[in-house]
Length: 317
Picture 1: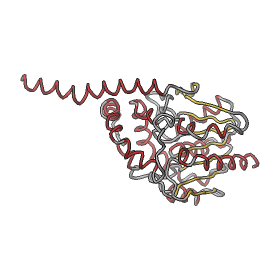
Picture 2 (picture 1 turned 120 degrees about the vertical axis):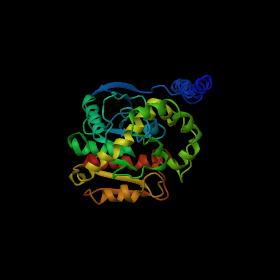
Picture 3 (picture 1 turned 180 degrees about the horizontal axis):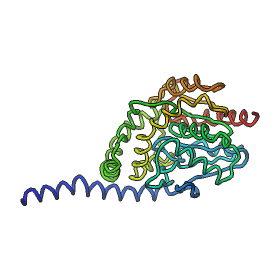
């Protein structure tokens, strides 16, 4: 009996209490390094963290899976703010935005919350710039609330069902909410730190990884338990929402432009860019030869120039 008791204590210390303590300490350090950089507003049960800069026509930026608004503030917000009022948000559950425990993580629901954000700030038909899963949220927003959208500028967007999940995100596919919470508070952070270089190589490659991604790009925030849990919830719910959206793409009534890297290691440009262009009349698809997935950082100037042109065209229509 003593042997089994001792074994149980050792198991708890090594595999539960130890990792939880490590995660809690590391989370506090990350939040001290990267505190909220914007302001907050309550929208439909979520507390949305957002940053805005500049004046003029509005560009609303929505980041991808596991990301946060710092993916855009890294290199894109400041140059665009010379000409536009740029607003970057943390999606519900990401960065410093919250999501109610019982709120669905579906793409469609997130689109509704972005619509609520637009109404709350009284934004007049902003151009929506969405990266990766943020592109899927932008598509849902434009399908269900076209009157709120001036146009879509989609950077390497998820537009179709992705099965299997891209390699860097496969560990997030945890169906059980209880197991998802347990993983988030125990092994997720130490394992993520161990696999950091290999994951970033896929996310950025073949482009070089930004050396300041952890801090300036907000990468460390994704390691926190709440963000891991939300990203897992987002990924598990994604395909169901996107499957229902695909049949409606022909209904899109706002200008849509898509920018993709032809060497993207996360999402294939043909499956998510070209296939979307075949369903949406007038969609403009632009490709960056040998570009990777993290276009807002790796090809920031190209993205800035492309969005400027898209904003001007949307304004003229």
